[in-house]
Image (cartoon, rainbow, N blue to C red):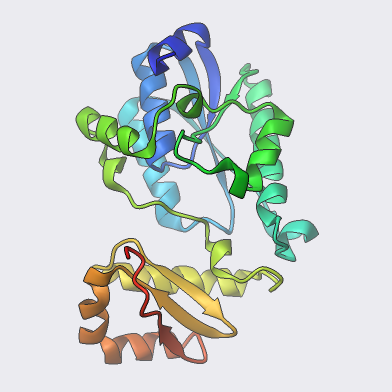
Length: 249
């Protein structure tokens, strides 16, 4: 089954939308197929502001309906306590909110951007999708991440080369309580590295130290801006560490 055939058979649906590579292409394919779809973005403390801006921007460029829902994820003990299966509880909350909003708007079918390259055996959130009956057209149609990027590039979507992104909560080790302060300084630290031209990186918390995980090509940027980085990070953390295992190795 092609993605076009999927939307011919399922021409009225809500899309759980992050504005990343996969959900952006899914929304594009739905709109291009003439389906009646609406994109639902759930705004939480786990998403940086630029992610919301990207989601709103791509939906507007595609001329798609877009709705933002606010969720207080840290009010849920099973999420804030950060267990190993935190993603299950978070996904259950977020998708449940989307399902409720979509049903009220007249969309009984909910779709997400899981693709054929995703390892569903290692993603606790996939259990929540199955329980809620969420369908994943990209996966059902056998579309891999590389193919989605290529199709997105051909379609002129600015999201085609966005790096894979995991929420801010993943920067905090399981078992460590997630707080607004930890999320805030993580977002500030990553925004700062982005301003230096770094791409596809993480700032993880090790105790109260910042551990920088970078691609090999960005090591020189870090060394060249060493003093500025130390000054910035030490205002938020108790120290800064550089992980010498490059993310692209």
